[in-house]
Length: 106
Image (cartoon, rainbow, N blue to C red; front, side):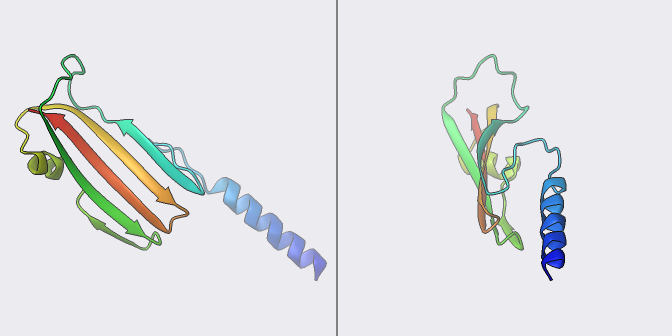
């Protein structure tokens, strides 16, 4: 019995270590709280007068809902000219996560 538990524990550890992938954004196994820029705008003129946000959420990594698209954030902010775009992800143990796109512009 002790051997089976040791083997099972070893399999779980190896599975955990090998389950990570290289991603465009950093992802934590226990908690993710990152804000990263997107490749939008020229970065030269970052003055803006309007901000638009769009969000989506995930529950138990089973259900995801919402619209965090760039288009929705532009629409929500009434933006005509996009200057810069940020992306923010917050996730705790895969139980609940929010993903927000923020657009800065005029």
